[in-house]
Image (cartoon, rainbow, N blue to C red; front, side, top):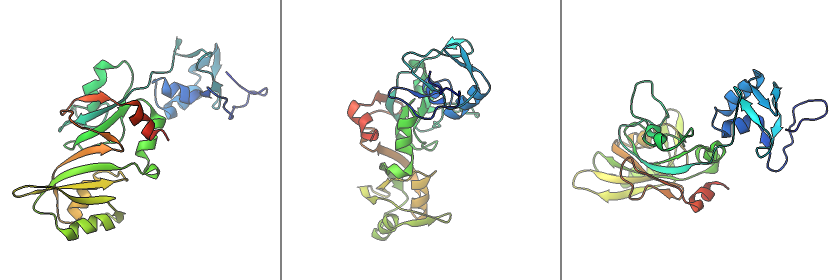
Length: 251
């Protein structure tokens, strides 16, 4: 544990070390914000010393960090992709008792996992799950412009005009939403399947965009996030990400 001589919070981190609240979050105890509350409440000790201030830096390899008298350690990171099935919520728990995506995988892991972003209750497809918050942030935040590719079955035929509107931008609730690309994916007897690529990620974005151009979605599936594809995974199946896929987002 590093603190300066006047016992003020340390802000400069050395190689291999991290802020105490970050360590607690990465150990899977709670979120970083809640970890700060635990520290300020005096519920965390480092090398036998109760810590009641933020800014303390710890060495995960050598410092003994305890919560409720038990030593905590960094979790092994988990990175996986699931083909989210229809009728599941993209959360770890649900107050309505609905099936959750974390419920599908939690029995196979002894650590806290969470989905990276969300898919609607009846939207299916590519959903990344992890316990690495810093890494997940690089996928979720719009500034990183990670491309998400969707296909949607619409009512009727997609027109060239509607495709151009999706790419130029449509106004939804006083906000302009634009597709990176859009077009016909598959032509069926009555209803077309269209492809839409976006880098934003507001709630119900693709459904709202399609509705705005008069082409409401019958169903929606996300095929990929960045280079990660759902591939041949059946609904509810998952796989670990490859090293290359993990590093793709860790830029």
